[in-house]
Length: 391
Image (cartoon, rainbow, N blue to C red):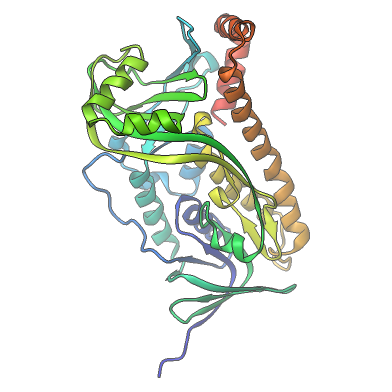
């Protein structure tokens, strides 16, 4: 009879997605004992097909991924730098254009496929030799001194801190009895990749309208990644179209700026909500990434926010001496205070933009047009906007 494994560690990371893996990597590099737990096996190889799920990474995120050794494993032939952004609002005839060079930057970030970044994280994780338990969590017990996790493979993990990076439906958050504030958008996001007839010139383009956001993001080989957030009824109708018919609708909505579009790979869709945990911490627990916050994709900051969670926790952990408890309530409150401000600001930004562009008041529409025109002429303000977008 085999004895069940009993593991003691400083940090147990639940969830081997992007946030969970990078947290395990970064903490291990700080010489913090870490165990990574996930019911699913990690993605260890990419496929030739282009992934419909992509991320817009900021320059700050890329610099951090480079520092922790992840970027060295990225397939650079499958990423696309962003040199500029163009934004259209309502029926504006001209776009607000933000160029990286206006803020003395080489790039404003990049577009990368989910599978490319996941595999890079896995390769960097292997280099740290962080132990991984491929099992589901079935029980969690919290105390003033430590926390325990019971796993489906019979193992138990005792840790000073449980880091919950297990997604929007977080099991850890439910076990800790932490509720969420849900703001339903009654929108569906449609995502797909297209081959464009015209070159994208490394420009990320976005169109805003009433409860609607369309983004065409540059990819290598003259491909673009499309993200179209629409009211549920309209999105459902579009999803019933054949792939080429949907591509034609995207080309029409984007003013044919990139010419004809041809589908490359599958079309995906998902419901959009703004979900924020009422607490970012619990006894011996920290919530990160989607377990703590989900924001509207119009901001393009979802995964960057999750990485900022990891960055902040590590910044605070560096200040602890070896005798201090990383799961101490006072330490966790520092983390919560720091991260809540950033997330609340992002929630306010996305809600405010949606309200602004959804307004049917002609006067407000005119103000929006004037505002876009004024911003286009203001070098100082545009430089500030670019700097904020690349953080």
